[in-house]
Image (cartoon, rainbow, N blue to C red):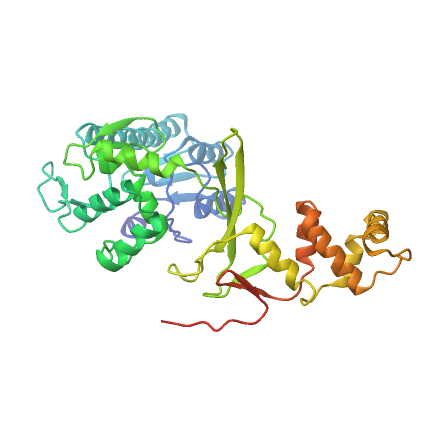
Length: 399
């Protein structure tokens, strides 16, 4: 193009390059700046290789034609054509740019058609999940998908173990420590990846493409898992749904640290059917195992946890002022409590012993919010180890 400028005696004031796609209107920063510079009479012409380098959408094309109509853009030169402010040349410019847009739209349609055709042949576009191998070095049209001889048997056994009652963490320990299973990059899999694999219907021979589109296809190659086994595992995963961490609020979460591995302590509830047709709710607290998946800390019932908390409430540090502020609006209720339980008539000033007695009363008889307020006022760090609450920093044994 620079040779053409010397031949035609054109002075090039500035060279600008753009790497952004011209598919959508006004998304290219260099092109937008060029339009502003021409509008301010900094330049009067454009030299480009072809019209489709300037625009492949109606918005950008309209901006160029408007500048020509306003007399601010004198000409657009390409490798073999010149477009000036004349009806025929502007019409030809619009035809060429519109043709470029048509080709771009057709290319998108053809790509989608090709992907659908591949799906109908039974081969999902893109990389297959772990357990399968894409034979990418075969001739075009002959590329197939086969089972990974190393990973496929392990994945099959993973499904069988879950069907037999193993948990996700059980499978994780087995797959990383005993089976020697790794990703394609040689890394160990994480717990979330285990559940993604267990829920992936591709392993039983079907897939949705595009994802969320509602169209399902069958694979044309051998599947790792039978359909019946895959459905059994889905029932295991969804038969007893558990709440996500943090989706439920329990009275004593957030105040304890696991004494075995220094992870947090979380809780979950379980329900038991009673003979009379009712259900009884039980709450269990346990280590989150965020720092150690093999943490040995056992579960503890909420009733046992509450009994221990009542035993140590006299020894832990309480934010007395905070408790007094929180109870200011409930002073009359406290006065009634003090007169009946503590046999005190002067309750305007609450001694520390009274506050601790009140704290015990709220832990036993208060609602969830009142319990949480008392717990939030405890400033001593509490540890849970071997089903016992302790205020002493535990000694962590590292393997």
